[in-house]
Image (tube, rainbow over all chains, first blue to last red; front, side):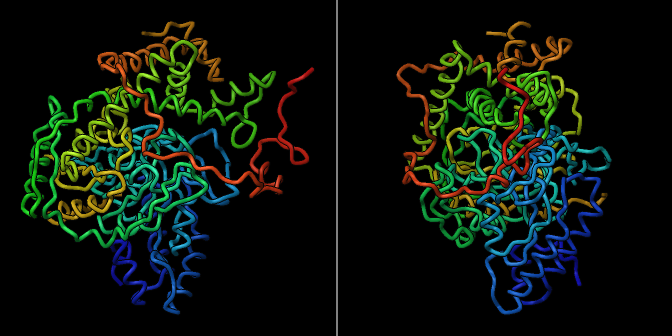
Length: 493
Length: 95
């Protein structure tokens, strides 16, 4: 039998439905691959017994010609999603030992459709980071290495475990979440596809909250079609999330081959940053040519408030995080450190349970929301956010159907990069092209499109109108078909 | 705007995070780097702009005021570091 882990999610589905192999066989192939890939540190918990049990149940259904749209397909789940009775710690020390009594809506949807859970994936602590180095469980390693080098590179973050696992064939697809770029940046760094849907498309219920007005779940997969298939299952209205959109979920997979003929693609001049590497410029130009060749029109546009999205984000997101993370107090779950009184117990627990980046953001958030500073920081940032959203609304009203940009300002960088360790803002700049999308609540997809001179993957991003993920899948598929290369890391692990 | 050492200690108290005295200076530097970065928002003309309250046009839904779940206190406290008779146990708060 050929290597079952190398199949796309779509082909895994087909092979299972046609009884070419069983779910137990694919599941065991993935569990074997995970066992051999410990050096990547992509999983924080492998649920092997449960996986085989779920696979057996799927095989019984498949044998009868029954089963859901993802019946028997093995997936990895980001540690941010509550999974009943299984490791759910947002890769933080403060949630030590936490095993939820309930299941997140997104994962419930996947199990309803027959998917199999392989385990929980590593991530930046509480989804705060762009390199997967803030995890309590240590950094995740990118399966890609620069040509002729054996230096470890980061997979991006915060969904670094999801991206690394998908890229290295350790699951057929993975759930991820995106607050400022945490799906799209790691997808771009690992040659995988990642989509952040419109805010409200996937329920946030049972996902550990970071910044509630920005958080959205989405898939990371090896192909555009795979992302469409996974999102079809993950998305949907949920009364348990008061911001869940009561809008029908279209058949995303049916939109994948729709093409871009007649679409108008916007090219925002503000995304052409000073000192942008030539290879990113070229990638962007290539992407526009591919879309034109398939019948799209390309038009220059302006999104004047782009440069303010990242600074506004670093007020809004920490403010919401400081409020959301107040619940980790050593009383209800996870870690408790003792103290002379209850306040000291809180302070000791949070000092020892939170990592450096989380503390920094909770403190920034506490400061900008504190008496006397609210108007100067938080209220101002929310006004700037309105302007960022209006920029997009104007170009969409002017006839733009989707926007093409680079996904990241560079390819993957080294683990323990000293420049970024010394200056938190340098790390934040990774999300410069992705964060606008969260601020405006729009959908965005990252698709691998080229390589830098060292052979590392680079991605393009397509931004769409609210609830128009279909156009993103169609445009993403054109990029995937036109780029003329496969994305597969050379195995060294 | 930037923070001084006393402000760092005060934020630590508000956030209920114990700050080691030998860490105050480093934290002050890190927080000021971030606050310096967000300073550029002051260039933006925000006169007459409404602050965003919802990223997609939606009104928060309401539901009937009735009990839909509950009756399982043992599940609620199942992850507690310390519990007794289905209550959370904390250090003494009243004398």
